[in-house]
Each structure stands twice: as structure tokens, then as C-alpha cells.
Image 1 (cartoon, rainbow, N blue to C red):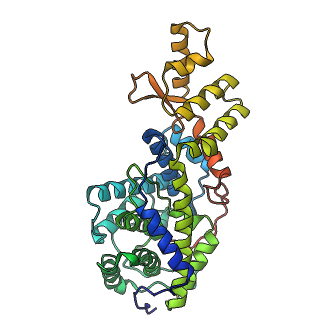
Image 2 (cartoon, helix red, strand yellow):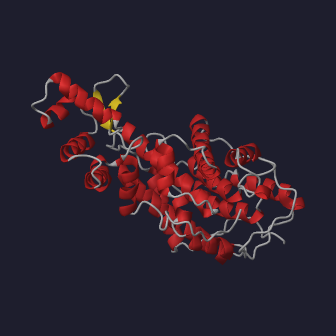
Image 3 (cartoon, rainbow, N blue to C red):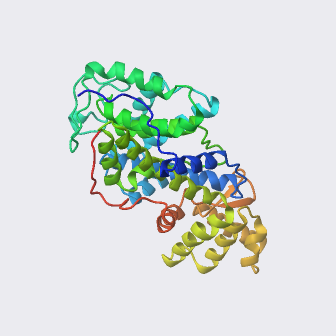
Length: 395
């Protein structure tokens, strides 16, 4: 099948796409003075990394549920099954990208980077010939023709892959106007899927490519931002697949329709997640409902719920916060009570294990599952995230 000319289509000045680009550039330029404590911020970021990895894997048919993911994360069993390894691989690849672009913000997105992303994605997974989600040749372009079940698109023959991918890499790294970056990211995402350069793992790899391009475009994730671009694609899988299919036509109207889908979704997701950097917003919208769920499920007592609310609101507390709720306990008994909170992973010492200041622990214990439920209720999780029936455009 012949390929459409690789280019950036120009949207109408009054279009929704231009408005989305303007707003995304504002979000990118925004200085973050987030009041959420860095330790709590990184815990929330870790949760979104898990969700990002799960979402990307589920688009391609992985049937792991959030409950299974949470259990594996708490028990540190993320390599116990192939489905969990697939998710852990994506999480590792995201961390790899963040490290790469923190070290060199202008790092080129080249063939070695794409190959490394693919190797990370399919690491320790069985070959598709054996029913797995790996690849017989990690990091190498395919040498066979592939078909995409459920799609009318027929990827280019393997003899064209090298030249098409060289063209795409050059396109990604062209030093044109910054205002074109977001359109370039959207077009590159579709073009990669269109080429289908690897035998397997293309969907997971292209969503990591999008993450890399956003990092390089200036959406920094250090202490100030959480990026969750896969939410754009897995929030409505059918819409994602349909938008990709429409863009296969390669004309400006079809490509702009794809760009509009992707950029409006990015704007919505980034705007929403940015609100969690405000400590009061995080406390009222997410942490308090999480603690209430723990009380309703009889995981904690009424007194423990009040203690955790104070810890969550103040972010960092010392022993005096506990003494308020246990006024009759001796110092040694109070110390034992605090130790029980720590043992149950309701709180963590800060800034080190021997410290006597504490922060709520939403990452390592029973609150993690409830935090996911609170994020879901607040609209941060994609629809049907816990159901196995997947509409897929296979990799």
C-alpha cells in the first residue's frame, strides 16, 4: 500500500485545534508552585504511571484489572504473570524516558531510542507465535508483512520500513517552529501506527513515543507535573481506533480530524491532572474520600480515620498530631500505636525510616486500592477500566 506524504496539515485559524494548541502551550508554560508535598506528589505520580501502563497494555488486549494490578503492586509481584510483566515493562520504559530527558532535555528521538523503547516493551514476554505479547527480534524492524485484524489498513511492506522510519525520525527531529510541535506529535503518532515498523508491540511503543515527544516539547515532569497521555487513547478505545482509521486516508481533513481528537484529549487530561498539585484540592477531592472508603470498609476505625484526615491535611505531622486523638496514652503506648499505623502502611516516616515525622501512605498499603476508587469517582480513570472486553486494533 502506498504511503501518504508525511507533512503537517495547517488548521484553520478559527478552528478548535488552534484553540487547543494555544491552551496546551499555556499549560506547558505554566510555572508550578504546587502546594502538594513532593513525597505525596511522587506517590500520586507513581499511581498514574501504573494507570498509564495498564491503559496502554489494555488497549492491546491485556485483561489485567485494576484490583489485580493493585494487589501485585502492594505485594511487589509485578513479574508474577506475563500480563503483569507487560504492564511493568511499560512503567519501566516511562521511567527510562523521564531519566533520558531529565539528563538531556533536547535529546534527539532517533532510531536507537525507538529500538530501546521496543526492547523494554517486549522484555521477557513470550513470542506472538506462542500466544505472547513479545517479539522474536526486540528492537529490530520487522522483515515480514503483517496484517492488522479489525482494520482495513494494510501496513507497508517490510522492504519499505527502513526508508519510511528514517523519514519519520527526520520529521520528528526537524527544527521547525515550536508552535508546530503539538501537531507534529499527533502526526508522528499516527504515522508510526500506519507504518507498523515492528513485528509486535507497536501500540505500546507508539504511546511511549508520544510520551517522549511531549517531554522533549517541554512538558516537564520533574517536581511539577504528571503526564498521562494514554488516558486520551484508552478513555474511549473505539473513538481512538476510529480516529486512527480515518487518518489512514492521508488527506488534510482526515489528518486534522485525528489531530483534533488527540490534542483536545491531551488538553482535557493535562488540565485535570494539574489540579492535583493543589494540596487542598487533592485533600478534599481524593484523600478524604479515600479515608472515608477505608472507614466504610472497616479497614480503619473512626479514630484512625480522623488521624489520617489530619495527617493528609497537614501533609507532614509529628507525634503531637497523634497525641490529640490519644490523649490518655503514655508516651511508650503512643509510640506503639504509631508503630501499628506504620506497620499497616497507613503512614510512612519522613524523610527516612528512623524519622519521627509522618506522611500518609497511599502507595504501599490498603489505601492504594481505595485511592484508585476515589480517582475513578472523580473522573481520573478511563471508562470500563476494570472490564476485560476489549475492542482492539491489534499490534
